[in-house]
Image 1: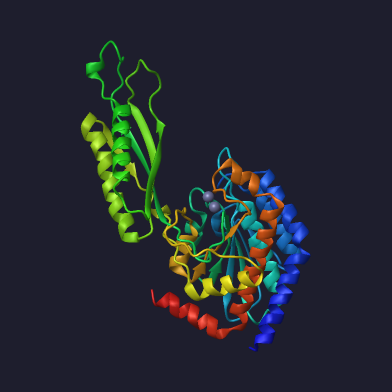
Image 2: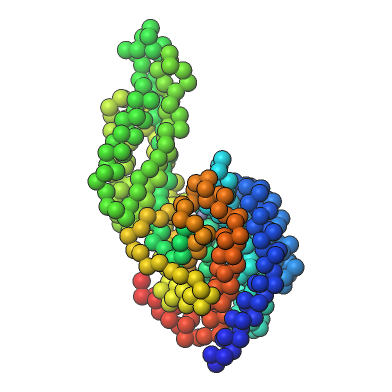
Length: 392
Ligand SMILES: [Zn+2]
Ligand SMILES: [Zn+2]
């Protein structure tokens, strides 16, 4: 299709996002003001679904793929299927410190911008409400249940301190460890006790020592969740939870083996029984950004005046979009919120409803919608996206 048709489509997409800007900001504020934890995001869904239905998505299915707070809307019947993901879960105690209110509105804004810009015969647009990113891995479950089966390309955008077209997001394994010993009076008969707290402390120290000697593109961190009931009872139950993160899948596997060794050290030092649950079905894979797709998004963002950073050795987090990106061509670009502050802090919670963050969110929605127009109207881009994905 002629360049002018692509450009005209992008103008229409941008105009549709801007026309809905007031509603998008209102929905963002509403979600931010009612933070809901993973799989409980009912208020967020109640804001997003009516917005989509008012802007061209007929009958959005709530409770999609067996998850009460997931949703799916489908528009059009063209030869290429473009999925846009919207996240909306918050964090315990610090609310929307990851700015998922902005992901949600960037996602639904992009979806309504895209369908306003193209003909239903040009593409199929799927908006997916994907709950529980911070915990459980909603997209991992949705992927396993077929949500991305008929999808050619999946996209979303995430707020961060700065704009990355292809952020280096790490794979992550979540592990719960439990030690069981024998409770006795800590003063009357300590020689008969088997101390589960000692076991978990030994394991924690071993992980802390390992942490100094791992590659810079990996992370180990955790907390002790149970350490006993009273100082005068030898604890017979102690537990901890850790995250093991790495950029390379092979290195993630190696680190998991070494961390398992740290857990076993706690058990053998104390004589406690050890239970380890690696939750392998909910592991987050490293993000594999599709290069031609990330480049298209970047060009569109730059056309809007956004500036992207190219740093490779930066510390980032993880995302359940990683699993999606291993299954279908995908991008998970980031957009700055206007301040150099990090996600998962109270400061980020405050930043996630500023005017600057909302302007960035609207631009991310525009850039995603514009990239959708590229996919719908440029068969050569789709060919290059698929070749990049097939090339590994
Ligand atoms: Zn987060
Ligand atoms: Zn997040």
